[in-house]
Length: 59
Image (cartoon, rainbow, N blue to C red):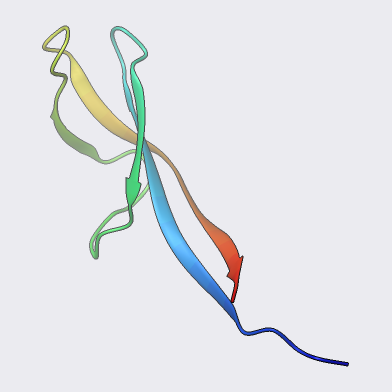
């Protein structure tokens, strides 16, 4: 009856291939699965994009 406005926010999950450290951040233009993005802060391994997904927020 009363519809709420829904907003979808895109997120990217990155994971270190060496120590399995995982972090979630907002999606940036140009992100794609399995891209190597940076060096890990804790072990100096390679960080890779594992998942891209959206979360729905009702307003």
